[in-house]
Image (cartoon, rainbow, N blue to C red):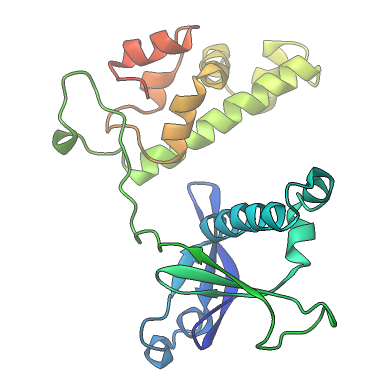
Length: 238
């Protein structure tokens, strides 16, 4: 994958325990931004590029095969699609996918067939749609601080792990779990209760979209019904 004049390198960053994959142009990756071509792309989220290419490639192949579903199914896997591609050039307003030559599958020559995909580089900082409390304006609500968010995500993961230990039989009693983790029965029960949070609440916690003030303490021991969890927190459900 390249931007005009520069190769893009796959890399990743980890934030709050979540791994984010990117493609970064070589000059920016090596701190040589001044050598980058004018108009080139410095960094793009890998899933955005990959999903767009896979979607349009499948549609292109189905159209070429005139609806021959057997061939389309055979090429459904990303690994199969990748075998057809010689390279991808990333522009600010489009992606150009170059196909490998029929005569030489390893060919990367300029006369390879190509497919142009409309595409827009996503903004560097996507606006996070914070879950809003009832009767609150979006301008009045701030996201939870990073340190508290990281603590919450870690506690949710710990609660799920402890619940799995109990369900799987790795520990047979809460007392055994307390002894292993060196904590009280109440702490074990409150931590495990986080494993029963509504999926949308967990997703909002991981993405940093919970409003400030909703942390571990507010989310412990939630109501059983997911809809009531939002009500108990005074939040509008997504």
